[in-house]
Length: 252
Image (cartoon, rainbow, N blue to C red; front, side):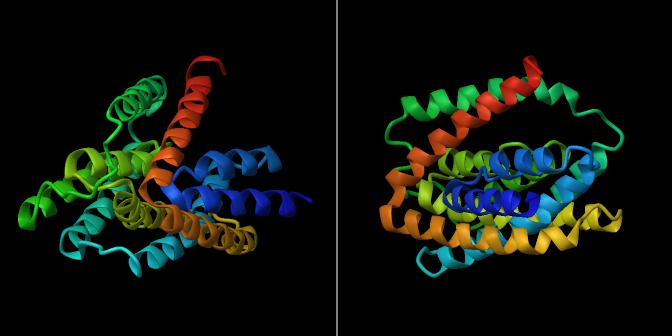
């Protein structure tokens, strides 16, 4: 029964994650609810080992319809991987508890800014080109990559927001770029979890299959309905993140 429950959660997570990120809002609580006595590291490792496949398939589907600035993103992908690995190491020596109460405040500011700037992310007008775009993408990858390894919640949404705000991408192009960098940060975490034996591969494989199905459906919806649809889902996901992280920080 647990297998069916978490597989359905993985499918829905893949759908949401393919559009704008935030699938962890669904799959992580579902896995923890289904296996309350399992080690948290094992559940997190299993989650990432399943969800990375949906993210990868979604990125591949997007790449066939959206022009991706590979020259800028390829080094940013490598930097994101290194940043995530460094963040995962840092959390072993420094407590991340201070971020727990700061995160919902940051997310509220992101939401307010997005709502006030009604045209933000509706038009694709990159602000930088060449080396400047590469350096900016690498800076985003390093900071958010480190955050993902160190703490994690809302990584995809932060990637999308910064690509829209700093690089001038629309929400659709930002979502594609965010996925490519997010794959790198997830792989870094998976390597660490797998090396320490914190992945249930017998659960990760069926969850990955469900996540891919949801991802294909979400990608289809995003490409069909465009930037306005992605922006709306982004606002919903950030709002849900505020509620979840606010509850974890101040009420739990």
